[in-house]
Length: 114
Length: 260
Image 1 (tube, one colour):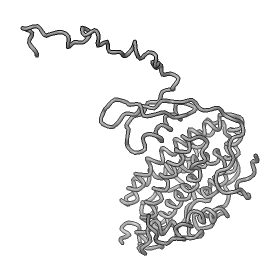
Image 2 (cartoon, helix red, strand yellow):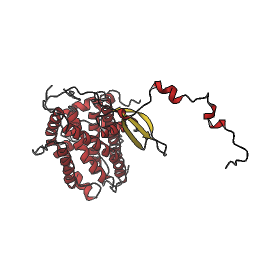
Image 3 (tube, one colour):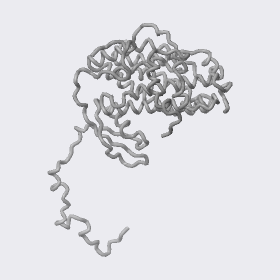
Image 4 (cartoon, one colour):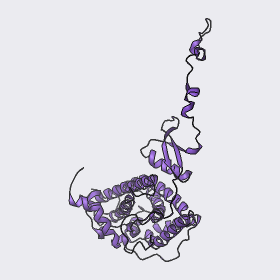
């Protein structure tokens, strides 16, 4: 690739790409807060080399049409997630043990609902 | 059509001419940025540049529409964008240069937006309600353009050997064209006499401080050469504008009046 003067016979339009192959940028998870005070929600993810660019990329990808009043970006690698194999022990509601649910218990007579 | 505050109305009015400058700068820059669509270094940056291109085209549309209203000859923003020829364009030559590589695109965006923000901030306080309204809307976008450009200047300048070399070479190439940013003539004097617009010379120190401090943070050396003689503001352009306009205008000129 050359670095000839741009004003001297270059073709129109964007030109060459970097020569050193850069690895994929890190992934960031994007959380946006809608107007009205609702909590931040996961919006999606973006690639970015660092936090500031991640914030800008998130703004460009997810908030151009007034969808948000605040953005959080978090390195995807910093998120600790449960694994599918945890589904049973984590989330099985234990319906065979009805005493785990408050509905199991009758409110004794004499207790006033306030 | 009332040239309510621009002195005399019509195509010779200084305000018409001034609005063409503001509009054409953003039309041409927006077109150059739009060329990156589908060619960005990474999807996210592709989207960012396309967003900035759209902002710029939107600003151009507002400035040119207002110019057409003041002129009073029935030309709207499309007529001004698509049916004027090279010599009638008033944009800075710097903005019509081919996009080059990513570094060139970013350094140009940074140098232009740095003045654009300062100028639009002042124009947002202009007693001309239309001008201040458009500038007030545009300045919010310009702040973001500057922030995006500035952050990338830091990363390119103070990044890898290659990104530094490319950024420095883009800066060396662009710097001589920056003199035109501060071009003023009787158009500006007439409008300044009415306190409608800021004196660009009064913004030069702020621009230089902002730009030079930032470039030095990015480990880039500010070139010392004198500004080149330029004439974009009076319709003299480089060989590149004609090619740009050919692409930009061909659809409108091939199908006059087409609606979609």
